[in-house]
Image (cartoon, rainbow, N blue to C red; front, side, top):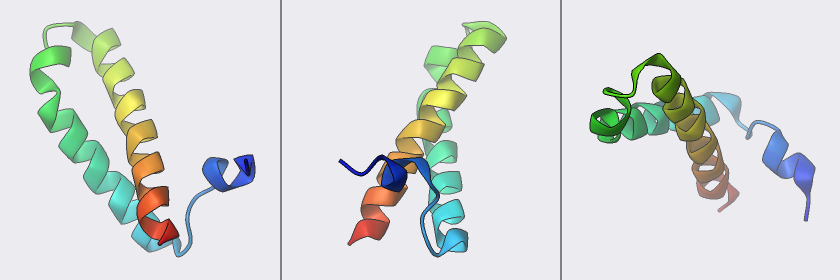
Length: 64
């Protein structure tokens, strides 16, 4: 498995950044009822998780 592929940003970068940003906004809005009562720690965990999921999905979308 090529780890460099998963650990670097996709090309072209503006499209990758847009896909990740949209994914993070959607994930954070969908999981708001879960992380909002949990406070800042839970919100930070949800943000990191949303960023990772958005990165992977953007890479898979751009791979085609």
